[in-house]
Picture 1 (cartoon, rainbow over the protein chains, first blue to last red):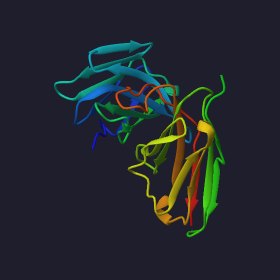
Picture 2: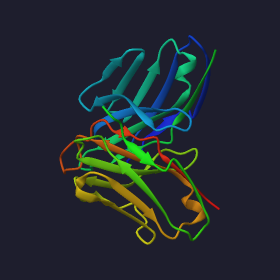
Picture 3: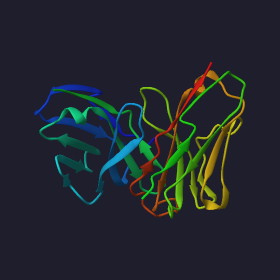
Length: 111
Length: 119
């Protein structure tokens, strides 16, 4: 299946530290997206990176994509307590209109 | 701009009963998705509409789940009869892109979800 698999599953860090999450996938993609979900809420889109892009920035977020390794990473710099959430990667596979989500990373930022 | 609206937010039913969820997408968004999210897992696509046509329902348990999108706007998802394993959050999302073969999926906008508990 075209689901992303995030690693690590749970991360606990101090406020101000950086948080890094990885995602791997299995087939060729059009793009890869990262979403955040606060407890009990819907998902919020963070960033989209196309298959021909290698790195993208948005505020304190940095996403990299390595299509040869079929992997992506999400870096949150200078984390804040408000960054406490679950983070999901989702892949838009070539030839498939379905956006498939991974299992998610739970990040806890300790004030 | 109003976001994706879903109702009800919470529903508790007994197994074998029926339940319906409603979704109103962002105005002008042609593509609408229903996802099922079981506790501790990522969302799983149940059905995807492009306007009022079904693009993908391959993961919809059609013996008990049904969905429709009237006039290409609002959508309802029904479960009848419910089973214990249907306990989950049902998320509706919409997008201005995607849904057609060859069209890449862009950003999805999600509603707050409808949490179903089946006893």
